[in-house]
Image (cartoon, rainbow, N blue to C red; front, side, top):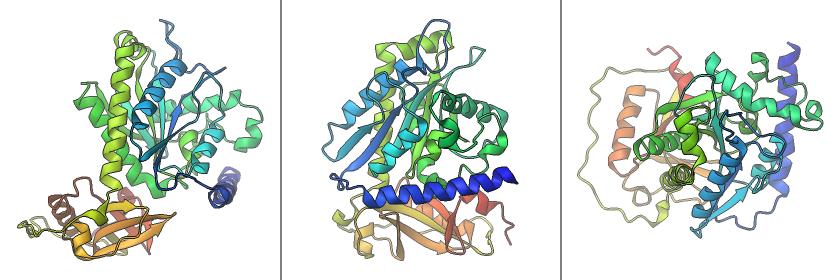
Length: 372
């Protein structure tokens, strides 16, 4: 009970602290898409060990700098780094950098390790650990707080070795979970399809560095430096260039799909029609489903010609960002048809979101309710 109360206090303090940052920080590039790139570890924290002598901190930094160099070629993108050289940066400071920059995305890059010849790439979003493997990965990354000065003060009793300490970690990131999962999925898709790396999937775990941010955030485990072949690949110029290109492409795909310039669209009638649901209705009491089709820093008039002919589009402003939804129903079967139709109109990365009593909740949680 004491731990839960402490976590609640920390979450409230965190909200109040970064609300002040968001209010006071003047962002000179407010019209740009801001990406914060975080190279894991650094300085006195080398990261995970490798028998071959590969250093996670160096590999992560080289990949991040290459990602940033490519993204900066786009005049509409601003890149912010948590570190550009071999220095130690506290986890809470990394989050502070992203929040003060009012970033649109936070991407943290790491390498994995294991006592076997495990291999493959995986990307994490914040969530309470679902199994021992996810917990252990997060635990290894979180233990860096012991190298920080005044870590007991900065994290108020958080214990990386205690599963109970993770209970409150998702409070600040729940609002961005869908977008974080989308970006993580795009990263994994590029690793798998373009680079033919083993896909270990998109996972949830309690990473402190993700908890510190108030925007869509992911942590990329690019591969295992403890695997003989994969470690050599990640330590090579070729491997670092390919991995950085895949991450960069995923970020651009995310930007293009979520932050669409919807008001420049000229509506042309399409022949595609919504088809009747072939599955039985699944009605969820007190739950409303919508399809998120776009998000923009600009307020767009809710006219069909602005949304590729879609009617009944709604809008909600969340943390300075306008989100646009198509459909409104408690019928999960029907909302899936709405999503299919939205995709046929050109919103290929649209996704279903859920609301309860007017508040956004994770889709997974909504579907755990009993359908009529």
